[in-house]
Amino acid sequence: MSRHRLEITLIGAALAFVAACGSAAKPATFHPAGPAPAAASPASAPSARGALTRPPFGQNVRVEMSGWLPAGSRRARAVVADKDFELAYLYAEYTGGKDTRWTAYVSHAVLRDFAADLAKPDVTTESFRGTVSYTHMRAFADPAHKGAIDVSGCYDNARSANTSITTGKVIPDRTPADDHYFRYTDILAKGGTGNWRVIGNYPAVYYPQARECKP
Image 1: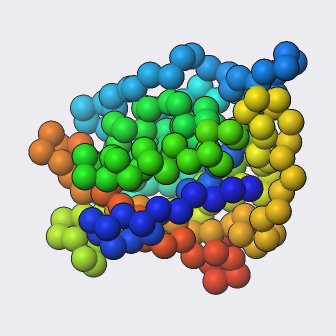
Image 2: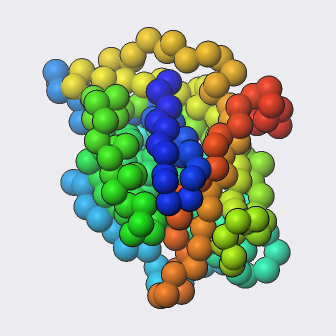
C-alpha cells in the first residue's frame, strides 16, 4: 500500500496518510462508486455525541472508525472533527485525488500542501478496496500550540489493496508488512467560526514501536 508523506513547514511536522482501495467496475475503465466530486461543508457545530459525515465509498470498501469519544464536549468535538477529516481525506485518495470535501476540515494555511500531496501520480492513478480500520484513539493538549488538541489513533490497512484507477486491478503490495500498522497524530485548533480544523500532523509511529496498533 502506498503512504503519502508531506512536510508542512508551518508547524515543522510530517504528514502521513495511506491510500486505500476501491471497488472494481466491469467495464475497461474503473470509477470509484459515489456521486460526482464536490466540496462539502461540515456542520457549523460538530456533534459531541459522535455523529460522523461519512463519504460514499463503494461497496467493496469498509472503513471501521473507532466509536471512542473523550469526556468533555470540547475534546469530543475536536475528535469528531478529526474523524470527519480522516474519512474525507481517505475518500479523496479513493477517488484519485478528485474529491475535495476534505478541504472543509483543514486550516487555510495547510490547504495547498494537502492539495499538492493529492495531486501526486501515485494518488491520481490509484484507488483501493478492502477494509481500513481506525482504533485506539486518544485526545490531549498539544505541547507546542496553545489551545490546540492532538487527536491520535491507530491506522490499519493490512486488509485492503491498492487498485489501478483505470482498470480496477489490484496493484502488487510491496509495502513492508509492519508498515500497514501505525499511530498517527493530527493537530487541531479551533477557528474563528468555532469549528475545529486540522492544522498539521506529527510523524507517524509504525509497528513495532506502536505495538498497540497491530491486532
